[in-house]
Image 1 (tube, rainbow, N blue to C red):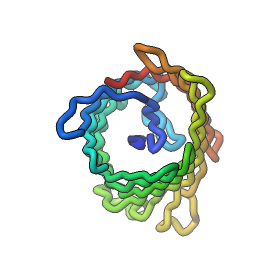
Image 2: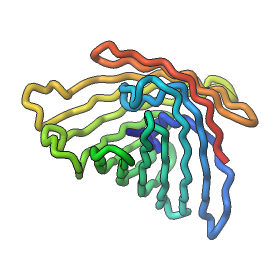
Image 3: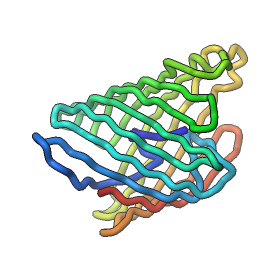
Image 4: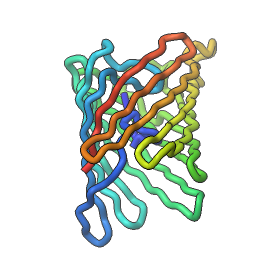
Length: 216
């Protein structure tokens, strides 16, 4: 599973910077990363193993964008596809779109729609599952709310904070409802970005991982 802002609305892919190919003020960008642990919404997506990740994004001057992102996953492969539209006015920004999560060897593919608003360095994003290919009806109404804040400590050092809550409307006992939090420090160098991230989850399964990423 993934984090586009993730695309990381606060990317678990915490990459920055674009090199663009211009076509009527359009941008094509690429990203690649290696992470010591692929964590999404507080949960490790594999057996605490290293993951290779990468993607390509196309953004038009109108605010429309499409992209694809992929990650290795314990012998499997996850590939996410997204389409979105974004705009801004002064310190205010917004984004809405859809993400399709596809797992090569796992039938649990699903689709989420999302809408987000931002003001200055803070953002609030709501994700809603709209399609689920598995037969587990207890997850069909799952949704996720994420609050994020990004602070530039220096010209090349950024602090990111995020808190999220997973809702499961079909689970009458609310056993699937859970909280998670994230703190990440990213050091930007000319060649790469280094991120040190710690996560905390309601059930106490905390994670720490290091990511090396590059955008071009």
